Image (spheres, rainbow, N blue to C red):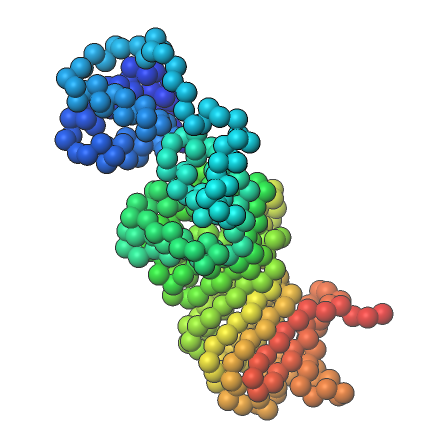
Length: 359
């Protein structure tokens, strides 16, 4: 949020002139100075042509900072065209111009940015990657690369915040650095924005950085969370997810006082998990954790199980009952509920699904 000083500056063109003069004296190229100006005052504070106007005056040796631009004749530009005419011109860029040129338009000027932001995004898939200071946003298999994290963040938020857009798939790549994930979380929190997405792809490699984003998903829209990892990392990952559930159940009274805040563990009510193999000990631990997971509705764990006979016995020791008509399926009664968890154990997978007793 802008400070009172910044807000005052935005309303006073003379103050703008002084700040631009400060950038001019740095000796850097004009566009770099404009980027520095926007980083200082905000990306929507001043269009490049207005910045360029003052810059060119200073370059010509004219340092009259009290100059009143309102007395200049009004020049019409392409952005003064009616929107429908402007859209007709844009159609010459191709059928998919809104997706392909959205972020290019956003970099031109404030009026172009407003036009691009008015387009309803048609991206179904998003992959977020950040290596060092570089960021890559992959929308529908089309990559957009950034050297400036703030610019990447601004473009990303413009999609996430669009009121008429919901993603189908969101993947947080294993190489997502802490700095960018922190900026993203802070920005979403400050704007009170939730991420609407149906499928989330996660991995344990950057779990620490992803945890902060958990409360920023609209849990009700999430249909499945996909998780991949090695055996040891997968067990640890599931341990931490279940710990979230235990922590939140212990603080249910406090959560209810905070209104519509949804538990982070609700996000993981439906999971599809993949790892290469699981030994009996690790598989037992995973199932034991899930039996205590209050928000679990469905989980499919794909892995080669080294043994299943002993695993079934272990599940029985937890209170599950093997079904006589189907020896691969057990029913585990959920305490304090009439529902139960149906557990199917095969050599290639484990399925756990919450079901209701048929009366």
